Image (cartoon, rainbow, N blue to C red; front, top):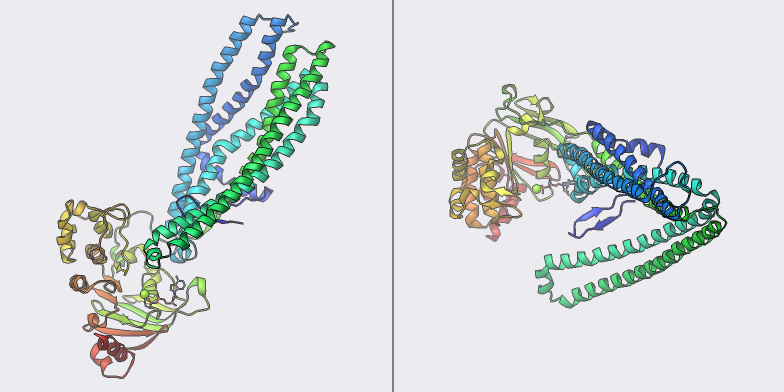
Length: 606
Ligand SMILES: Nc1ncnc2c1ncn2[C@@H]1O[C@H](COP(=O)(O)OP(=O)(O)O)[C@@H](O)[C@H]1O
Ligand SMILES: [Mg+2]
């Protein structure tokens, strides 16, 4: 189960689920190798260096034994060498170990980073090409954690888990072989003690991890309280609820302390258990070994090497438990990444497209009996039967109460969603016959809430046409009534906006969005309540700019203030997903309908 979890930044992140290790999940996990494949040479090289590194590590205690025994004058068998020679061999081995360790770390890092960069790029590319309802059904935090934490988990698997597994197996194999070779009797004694200790330790540490995760969750909870109250500090103060928040935070922190202390108790038990049992085991082995030494069955060097190898073997066994849970997490991560990669993307171009003349639009738009409901809420039909005709260059106003389906209609026009029923035609051609990228290239949307990307004002305007010149950008800004305020900033067009940059007012952002649309020079323009959040002064500036923008193109204007759309060629009144009435202002005012009553409502109050 994925558990929502707030990390230190307060972002909602989902924890990577663990997946049972089965044939199926391992087969799916092998997806990683699609990305490792281009770097296979380096990867195999890394594996070889790991094997070499285990071998040299394991040879070390053996040489230590030889060194010790040479001083005791024990019969050395085949390897007859003085202490000096053995010490030299050991120094040589250490030098070799240095080179090997360097190569192992370097090769695996290189493979891991490259493979995972490729994976991240592909995930991002596919994600950004997904259709709108993909995004409507997921949280942003969840999606970005696919690219960050899931991929990092997989990267760990490539660079460390696999390596550690291989190393662990080799260590176990060589270590067990060597201690058995040194003394089968002592090995049997050791095997009756060490695995028991390891199993108890693993169970213990699982418990500890659970408690410490609870403590972390509690800490995250209190972090959320801090963030919420700071973000909404004006609410807290306006309600003079400081005491309330202080209590809430105090309670939360007390919970943290309780958990953390419990965790400390567990850890204390664990540490004392471990110290006792590890040293107890050493005492046992050495005591028994000492007896064997007295009988001449074992040399001092043998016993030393035996104890060191036993430490290696025991440590490796304990490490496997952690590797197992890492592996489960990795399979969980690959499964989630795979799900994402399996999803069908929208058919948009990956590279920049030049508009193909055969797809050039003239601006006639026909919506015929459009019906639609959102994929996430199929049972509610947002649009029931909507037909609207626009001739090239016409201005069509769409009005109606909020929730009527106006913005949804815009999404259908931009082909963010496919209608369930009815037809959408551009210049009499079925919308489906025009490639998405060519279609959207000729449309522009000015929404109610303008999002500026982190970057300069210039870059933000040029978003509509990335290769525009400075002159073109300034001309667009002038038409949008934005040039003057942009020039008033010390850095002018290079002023950085967005999250890290300066804050612009709603009206200023709106005018930048209009400049963006003017620069794009679309055939079809869509304004979705582009002026509704503005004060009257910036509204008149923006309205001017919009009038400039609407010249010579088909435009769909969703307007909150009816005064702004009086001159529209056609006004469509939408309610509950159907067209109630349509016509010019004059025609609609002549009948006692919804438009007339909406008008009366708006102008009574003013
Ligand atoms: N992404 C969505 N998923 C599900 N329902 C939605 C979505 N967007 C809007 N709706 C619902 O569709 C209806 C029409 O919304 P909308 O087109 O935004 O209305 P309007 O722009 O006229 O105020 C509303 O009931 C709204 O709750
Ligand atoms: Mg809307």
